[in-house]
Length: 514
Image (cartoon, rainbow, N blue to C red; front, top):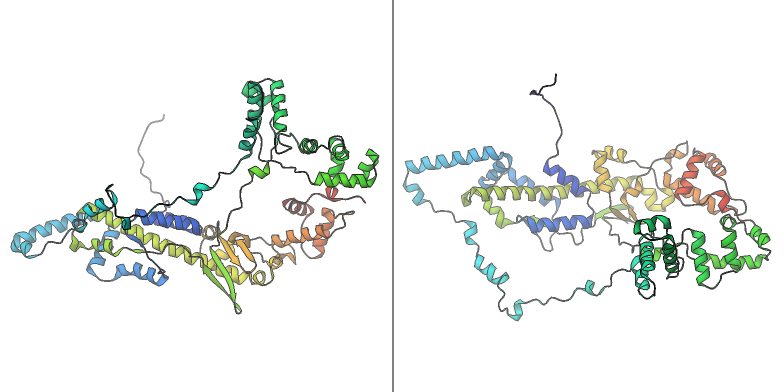
């Protein structure tokens, strides 16, 4: 019979301290994200100050962290507060107050003789702050800073495919059902401008008839750019040929009736079936090549993103130097004014002292974690330089296989630490800008392949296909045999996978009949 009961069990579990959680977070940030985080901490933590024109060196960080071990009364008090749990600290404060009371009874004049420490908050002139920042009254011209309009105010918002098509609908006369159908179709177009959802399902969800949906589709397909609203590539190309007045021509006949032969590049067979000379077929093929198979992509594609390297690797003499990109990175120090408030001689309120202790600990923790992130990235980049020297000298064909776990063992950290250190970070090298994770690749099997990275293998496959005879393209088996002759043991299936990753068509689609 089931009944509730209490059991006492002993178990072990791992928990992440706040400092370790912050270290993990800081480690995987790139320089732009780290800059935003430091800026937010400067606003939230009064103990942090941004230095102007001075860099915070690792020695200064170490000095700040080691300063708490100096036998200075105020520093020692800080260490006691940081290391003592809150409950224990409250007892210590009560014991201190009771001893102070006993001392006052033994020597009543002692309190009068000792000057009372001034409260730091009493020294702040809050009136001037209110007058300067909150008073809406008159300001002198010298104290005012005119706000200029931001440049972003004059930038136009990007035009999407849906907005471009909807703006054209407003200029066309149609009944309500046709307009609803056209708007529903526009809402179901993918980024390439294709309509992949069946008209029946769209009409059913919108409460429209199939005839209304066909009328709406005809209207959408008449909009700019040509080819919008097609159900497949064949219809997309035919819509573009129709808009150019090429309906019924040789190019139209090829796309309409011989799309499969066009994909197979069997141009002689197309000429035989159409009864046209090869010159006419070649002209039609030039027209087809100028068509856009993805007409909506020009409105759907995002603008290229600017990459700012986190690390610079450059050659000086025979050595490679590594430098972190600290440009525009806020350099932080402890605010000396707030730090003095930790001195017990200031005797702030207990709640104030607890808040100051927490903020001071948080500031030190952040500075330590930023420096540890810096050292970890430098160690990783140093190993990359040592292992990829051939790549830095001669280019992509000489990149060496390198595993995250091997590098982690070399620098003495967990593989997850290396993975976070290289995530989303870019490095500027003599060969160009690369993502830091780009240098980590498995090795290929085989006697000669043990030192060959997968990236190099893919480049070999691509080079073989580029140099092949288009009339007799290489098969996957032939590419596999060539690689095995070079000592790189791979299977035909692996070669096919790499070829698909490179978006290279199969042998059948690469063949050109002459």
